Length: 583
Ligand code: ARG
Image (cartoon, rainbow, N blue to C red):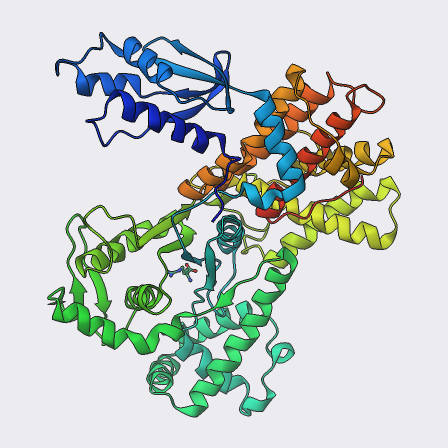
C-alpha cells in the first residue's frame, strides 16, 4: 500500500513522533497531537508540550516548564522538505509553516496521479452501512430520505477511502402488520393473480384502509392474527401474497433511489428470520436471557427497561431481528465496522442491543477498536412552521413529490438561461436533487433541520446551487483560456508565491484530512464545510487577487483552477451531487 504523502497532518505527526521519541524515550504512550491552525502563527500546531510537562515534571527532567518542552520538541524535529519554518508560542505550542514548494509539488502530483491518491487510510477493511431501510407498505417518509442521503454519503466516503462497503437496506418486510395486509388483500382480490401495482394503486392508502378494517372489525382482526401465523409457518398462499406486497413496495422505493442515484442491496428483516432461534439459543446458553412477564428479555446495566427478545405471544421483534442481523454481519459477512443510520429516536434501541452484544462477547470490551458498531443518529425534518414536515393537509410528504418540486423549481430558474430542453432537464435534476441533498448534509446531522425550498435553491450562501455555479465558473475560466489543460498538467509548474495562491494551495491539500475527519466522526457536515470554504478561498483570496488568464503566472494559476475544480468535483461526488460544467 502506498502511503498518502499528501496528508500534511499525517506527515507532520510522523516527524513529531520522532522528535517526541528523542526527548522522552521513556514515555511510550504519547502520540503527537497535530491541529490545523487558523493562520497567523503557522499552518499546523503541535500541542503536546503542556500535557507532556505534567507527566515528566518532578521526575528530575531537564525541562523548566511547557515552553522549554516545546523548544525541545522543535529542536529535535528531523529535517524535512515539508517544513519551511517553526516557532514556539505561549505554553509550548510548536507552530509549523509548511514549505510552499512542497505544497505545490503535492498538488502537481495529484493533478497527474489523480485525486484517489489523496484518499485517507482507515484501519477498516469491510464495513456494513445499514441505511434508508423503509418499511413495506408504510410511508417512506422524510426520515427515510435523511437516512438515504446521509447513509449514501457515508458509504461513498468510506468507499473512496478504500473500505469495502456492504450497502444494506434493512427493509421492514416482516412483522404482524402483514397479517392484516394479507387478509385485506384477499378480501379485495379474491383471485390473487389480479394483484399488481396499478390494481392496488397507492400502497400507503392500502395500508391505511386495512388498518381501519383491523381496528373496526373484531372478526377481521382475528383472521389477520391467524394470517400472521400462517405466513410465519410458510403457507404458500400467504407467502405468495406477502411476496406480492413486498414487490410493489420495492418498486416504489426504487423510484426514489433511482432519482437520487443511490445504490443499495436489500436484505430485509425477513432475511435474518431463520437466524434468530440460533442466536437466541447462544445468548440463552450464555445466561443472558431471562423470563419476565411472559416475555423473554435481557436485563442490561444502565437501562431502566429490559431488551425484549421474544414477545409474550412467542413472536420475534425488531430487537431479535437486529441481534440476528448483527450476528450475521459479524460472523458471515465479517464486517469490522457496522454503521446504522436512523433518526435519534431509536438511539436507545441501538445502545441496548449493542450492550447485549458486548455481554455476549461479540464486541470487544477491553478497549480493542474492532469490530465496532456505530449508531449514526439524525434529527427531525421540520417544515417552515417549525413543526414536523407535513403537507398542507397534514399528510406525510411523498418523497417523489418532493423531488419533483425540487426539479421543477430549479427548472424555472434555469429556463431563463437559454438551455436546450434536454440539457435543461438534466441540469434541473442535478441542481434540484443536489440542493435537497446538500441542505440536509450541511447541518450537523444530530440537529433538526428545516426543509425550505427557497433557501436551498438560492444561489447565495452555503447552498448546492452556489457551489455548483462556483465550480462551473472555474471550468469556464479554464475553457476560455484556450489552453489544453491536460497538456499543462504534464509540462507546467505550480508556484505559490502570492499569498492568495499559497492559501488556496494549503486548503486544497487539506482535503484529505477533512475526508478523514468526516469518516472518523461520520459527520458529512465537516466535508460540506470544507467544500464551502474551498470555494470561498478560491474566490475571495485567490481569484480576486490573482489574475489568471493573460498573467505572467497563467500556467500555474490555471493549474490551481483545475486542481480546485477537481477537488470540488470529488466533494460533490462524495456528497452524491452531480456537477455541472456550464451555467
Ligand atoms: N425500518 C426501520 C425504520 O423505518 C429502520 C431500520 C434501521 N436498521 C436497523 N438495523 N434497525 O425505522
